[in-house]
Each structure stands twice: as C-alpha cells, then as structure tokens.
Length: 159
Length: 282
Image 1 (tube, chains in turn yellow, brown):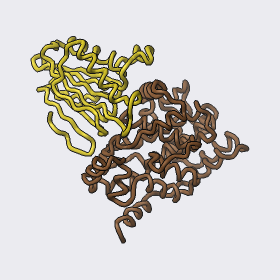
Image 2 (cartoon, helix red, strand yellow):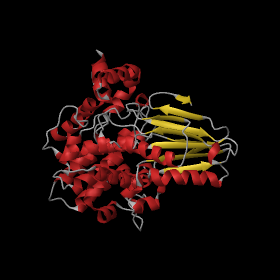
Image 3 (cartoon, each protein chain N blue to C red):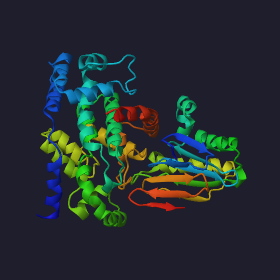
C-alpha cells in the first residue's frame, strides 16, 4: 500500500506492507529515515529552510520548514519505537533553476538548513543526492528499508 | 513532410476554442456587460454549467451554502472569478491527460497550470497590473505546447539532456536545437489558432524569457515568476526538470525580495489541497 507524502507533509509507518512515497521534490527536500530493527520508516517533504519566515504557518504545518519538520519527523519515528543510532538516513531534492544564485537559491538553502540541524544533533547521512536542475521522487519500503529514487525522465533506481 | 511540419500538424488535434468560451472572454473585456449577461451566456451550455457548478462547490472557494445555478455563482463569486473558471474549464479539456514524453502523470501539467495561474493573478493584483486577466489566462495556457510536443520529446530526451549540460542552455533551447521546435513556440501557434491577442501569443512564446525581456512588460514578468516558483515547489515538474533560467532582474523590477518569494511559496503550499479539490472536482 502506497502512503503518499504531499508537499509540506510527513508520514511515519511501521506497517510492513506500506511504502512511503513523495513525488516531485523540485527545490524541496525529501528526508527518509528507517530503523531496520524496529522496522519503522518515516518520510518528510519540506519546502522552505526556516520557520522564522512565518511562525503561524509553522505552527499550523511544521512540515513546511526544515527546522520544524526534521525534529518532528524523528520524534514521530521514535514514538513508533525507532532508535536514533540505528536510523538509516537518506536526503534527496534541493534542485535549483539555472543561475539561481545567493539568497534566491531555495534548494541550496534548504540543504544547508538540514546540514546544520543534522550536525548539531549528530545525525549521519547514509545516502544523499541533492542539487542539480532535476526533479526527484523517492520511495521507502517499510518492510526492509529498501529505497528507490527516480529522477524525472528516468526509471526508479534502488539506492 | 519534414519532422517539424509533422509536429506542427499535431496542433490539428487540439479542438477549436468553444464558442461559449469566446463569448465569456468577450464579456469579460466589455466594461458595459453585467453579471447577468455573463450568466445568460453560460447557462445555455450545459457541460460548462455543470463543470462550473462543481468547481464553485469545491472546498477551494469555501462557500457556506451550495450553489446550484450560474446566476447564483456569479452573484457569490463575481464576474471575474466565474470568467476565470470558464477558462479553467478550457484548460481542463486540454491539459488534464498524462504527458508521457515529459514524464508527467495525469493531472500534473494541469495542476501546474492552475496553481501558476492563481499565483500569477495574486501577484498581478498585489502589484496592481493593468491586465490581470491576461496574466491569468497566459499562465494557465503557457505550457499547452507540451501536449503536442510530448509525443516526440521522449525520443530526443537523451540528446537534449546531453546538449543542455554541455552548452549550459535551457530545456526549451535544447528542444529547439534538437527537435527544431519547442513547447513555447508550439503553444504560441495554438494561441494563434484560437485567435488570442498578439500580446497573449507573445507571452506564451517567451514565457521562459529566453528571448530577452522588455523591462516595461510587467505582465510577462509575473507569468514568468509564477511559473518559476511552481517549478521550485516541484508542482507539475517533468523530465525537463528545473532546467530553465533564473532572472534576478525580474525579481528586482517587481521589488521581490527573497522573503517575498518564500512567503508566496508558503501561502500556495498551504492552498495546494484546496487547489487539488478544485481541479479534481471536474
């Protein structure tokens, strides 16, 4: 059963028949986490780097921003029995339009926000594919943690 | 018949613009016409009426009571929004299908069209542009050329990918170089077939601003910005990805700072569910 994670959305699951999937990341970032012992998976699709932009929106929907979405993703997985040290972490997305430089480069800033949060919280990334001008889709099988990445125009590949 | 002629021939499969839509657009332009003029035109077209009522009653508009006639719809939503919906219906006819050549699933190109049109209109209102309806319609229909090129572009994808990386050009420029014609140009030809204004045809042809930008033309600037933001948000993005150019000059002219852009993204990110309810209702 596919569980679709929309834009500014997050889902966790310990149902081994489920597959978490998020389509069309653009400059957004998809963070997938998986604990192989507890068989718990989580997938976040955030759009913007920093909730200081609009605290009200962040309160209503924490998954819109990196700094509110990422902690909530981990917490939701812990609730289902996942343990931080066992977590396999995948990060994809953060693409950019050609010549999109400096402050306007949302994809890059989304990625930098994540690096900062992970560094502070000592989270290691197991697989990362970010940047470029391509659009990406990711899915995670909760049964075994196998993940698939699709770049638009190409087939799904196992990562 | 050469390759380009064969592709252009594909435009013949696109249905002419319905008479009722033409009349609705004429009413929208005429300052003397009233809300009931508009309702009178629409109510004789049962298919359009049915679709408009479904859209009116979708959560997008959040009306507290059910609308069951076009006269009511015009009264509740106003002429402008009902005209926009008649144009949405035109887009719906033409953009809803999957575009396999661009690796777009059914509904994706359509969703991009609708979100970018509402976003463009919001910016046009905020900046008080002269021609807000033009901005809405052009945003909605700018990628219609993809429906014709989709059949062909897949065959050339690897070649296009290769040269856009090598030459640092946009996907549209890659289409033009490799296939001989691109989706924006085909869109302009469709707009010509539909007897749209020269202004509309030009916006559709140059909506990626590859052909340069007349800095006085704020309408095309807004169409461009809404398109770019939807790309960044990943809405209806296909195999062409984000391989289009960013023009900081446009942001400057519109007095858009980086936070303005992010706030627009946040606001439309929140509205995505409602837009989905609107486009899913017909």
